[in-house]
Image (cartoon, rainbow, N blue to C red; front, side, top):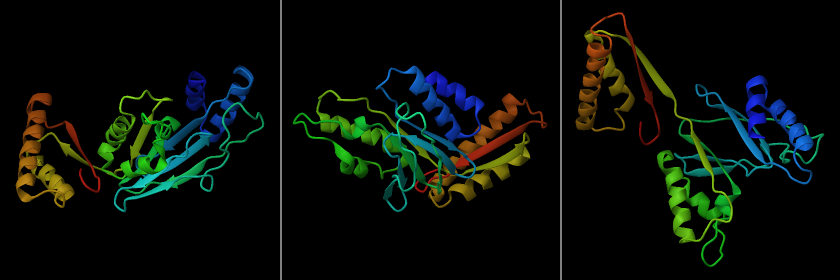
Length: 240
């Protein structure tokens, strides 16, 4: 199934059509009575626009780290949540959403929610929700640590898979490989991180940036001023 999906996604421009063809493949090729759940996203990293299709998978979660809110993307926002291989005539349709800066789209398997403690208690949705509002850098580690503490050595009853996609706008600055461009690089850094750093911290970062750019000019381009450097700054609500 994975290889068929890989082939289809390279040859079809619409995600919904990929799922329609994949559903036909599973229905005809996989042992009757078995089915496959799947969830796929196509994301424009420049705009944050998301197109997705859900085939019977756990509903993805949209986390807003600034407002500390979570939104479960349920059937009201998605359609055709039928697993692959059950109904040949199923027509999958895509759902769309626009990620805002600092928001995280989170996909996970039911093994996360179904994890059991030694006493047999289910980890559940509420505990999961409480762990995902932390910094996007630490969601995966925080959830896995929470599951580990909850299970206390108890073996998982199902696979545990977690995927996080955080939309963070990226600013770019293109420079010529000339020392006189260093002032532009330092200004670019200062304008991008001034609110997150103290002046002392900014000075340290500026010094490190100056050294890095200088080394690239001297050693990579060997002082050839025809080269081009690109500086990229990724922005989050609580870091950069």
